[in-house]
Amino acid sequence: MWSAAVDWLTFDVLRLAPQTRLGQAVNFFLYDSVKVLFLLTVVIFVVAIIRSFFPPEKARRLLARGNEYAGNVLAALLGIVTPFCSCSAVPLFIGFVEAGVPLGVTFSFLISSPMVNEVALVMLWGLFGWRIAAIYIASGVGVAIVAGIVLGRLRLEHLVEDYVWQIRMGEAQVENPSWPERLAYARGYVKDIVGKVWPYVLAGIGVGAFVHGYFPQGLLEAVAGKGSWLAVPVAVAIGVPLYSNAAGTIPIVKALIEKGMAMGTALAFMMAVTALSLPEAIILRKVLKPKLLAIYFGIGAATIMGIGYLFNWLI
Amino acid sequence: MSPMNIKVLGAGCARCQQLHRLTKEVVEELGLPAQLDYITDMAEIMKHGVMRTPALVVDGTIKVSGRVPSKAEIAGLLTTATTAATGTTGNDGK
Image (tube, rainbow over all chains, first blue to last red):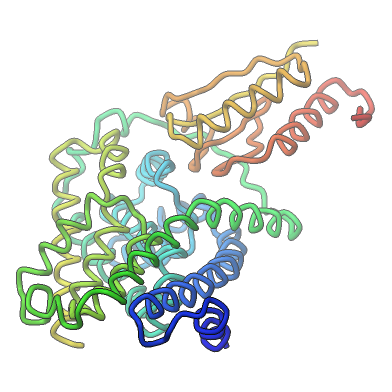
């Protein structure tokens, strides 16, 4: 449906020839941006409604009872549905630890929550199809579970800033919102998120369209294809400093895959972008001593690389 | 009548500063008799039982947590708080 409308717009209205590079690039840009912006609005609205049923206070209560292993799995799953913003990472961390949630379980949550986020899902679904989106969710949860278990086993409680253990949290009344409140929250959330990411979506798709139309096919086969072992760690190293901007990077990644980047390498790159970022490190430094911060990022990055190699081998 | 006690909780993130700014503007525009504090100390924030910042606390009750409401919504929250506190009937003639 989109395809016919966009073809008409590019080739009939704008009078660009389908076989030219410019025509290809413009067609690609219009098709993807219309589709993705539409999906973003619809999916974020639905996700916001679901999230209104899972405040972090609920996750905290559920996880405080749990043990390790089962707790890691539950934490990784709750991370998908619980709303998360990196500005809440510190109170969330303290709230979990204070309630007796094991450190490794807390880390599972902290990894899964930003990584499996609605913007990344929409971008993947819209640009790659639901299969890749599902693979991304499953491997995101997998990374969160494995990294959380490893971090928990290392017994690093002494590397959490000492003041964290002294904080006593007050009991807050968390009221159940009514349906009109949920809908109002979802509308506000859509406005907030779509209003923030749309320039990145368009910029990302624009760069992607340029790559699509102007770069030769198979350009990246040699450097970032399946056979290139170094590509996975390099992709993760580039992805970490990029601030969790799934909106801008995923369209570019799509174009890079077309030019020969391997799927596993691309997945690892996207996960590094969303899960690990420099601003988040600065925020988490308030509760983690530098050594634990380094271990957290190291194990996170290593697990993500594992996913990259796994999918380069599988797909 | 003691002034209303308003607290904005947030450890200095952009959205937290935004909520503080908007709340301050609302208090000034409506001329509310209120004491507005911006709390950035983590231990103090956690005492309120808040896990999502920014949060808006009026006379000890959490009104908003984890989002930045519009100025109109903040005004609504603050004016219902005053009528409840002083026991007067609503003053909706705006």
